[in-house]
Image (cartoon, rainbow, N blue to C red):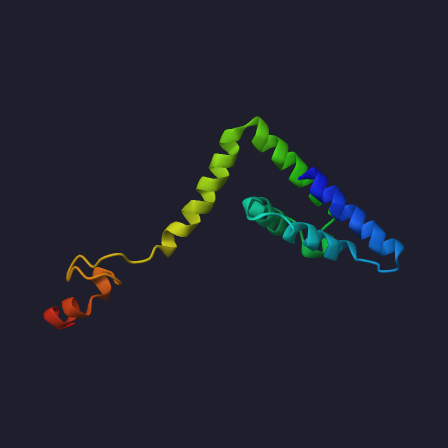
Length: 120
């Protein structure tokens, strides 16, 4: 990832040399948006902890590299991160099969047949 971030920084320098100045905060967002989805937890952490107007490209670069090194030296950290992101999705589980009428697409508490039979 370091090579990609370095290339992005060089591209910013080249555009600046050509007369197009990119604000530090905007470049910091570009760095975050350029990361693959597997870095979403790092991006979330950075955006939660740091005020948007205080985003610094050098600090983001360092945070990404240090997190990457941490995950390489401690592979279980990556698994914990993945597990944490999966646990957020548990509340968004789609209904599979109603236990009352045995049809797909809704939960028992939403079942129209059950409500009709019980007179709700």
